[in-house]
Length: 399
Image (cartoon, rainbow, N blue to C red; front, side):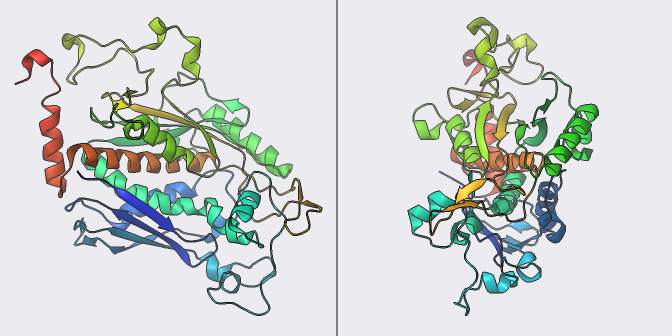
């Protein structure tokens, strides 16, 4: 049984980020340019902070690829943090010194003013930190660059097996698009807020500008869609094998992602069962794809198993916890009233968050496809999938 495993390591202002992706079949075409494309998409979007002006994320492939194709061994990625050399720590030292592996004298200035909404206090109490930087460096959303790198590898496998990934912004702050809006994915990629409606997109930009003026931050909602997902991914037989539960865990593992729905998970509660559930069409209405539905309120998953329709996932992203005008807080050392620590931050990450969701979905789907179809080589995995899909016909036709 094939499975995809992955890990990331590294801190926000350390030397860089590492991702290890294990279980990738051999023979998958993969290049640094393909990974760079996804990393560049993550860095774009109105409302990003000064860090994006410093970093030009590039993932070096340091293992698992030869002559433009994977060789079956773990794929290793390295993403350098340019800020490690160029930036300055809170006490005006270079980050190289602040984040030194070895002890330095005098020691770097400690961060003790915890930020509401961040991991600062909970992680410090859990791990015994006296300096909040020990947690904020790893809890930083900078780690998402490694996820997008790993997701780009998984995405290539999914693409070779017929999947196509897209995402767009549904809402920023109080500004939202119409639910049934037709989407031109090319226009979404050109929009600075990744919005399918130019008029609404401009209103989102103005909402972000107003928050920035106030020293505040904004959250929102985004939607990701994956077409070409084959039948049979996930399972109904155990809780942790359900595709829906795996998607939920993957999405909610990301900083600032506070809610996830598959299909009409929340809006559908206002419908009756007759209005919600997706009618299965007869064979003469399938139009080349088996077992089509008249609607897709389920978002492509039923009983924890993919049903052949597009996978539709919406995610709510809370406002960033680091505010230019800090919230009242308390000092980790003394417990006294202080203003929360401020470190260079974004105003709104919702446009970039869609790219991260695409990456997480790619990692889940690649794992689920390898679980279902196996294969040590890409051709074997593809052949196994095609053989299975030949069986997804009316039972009377199944030989």
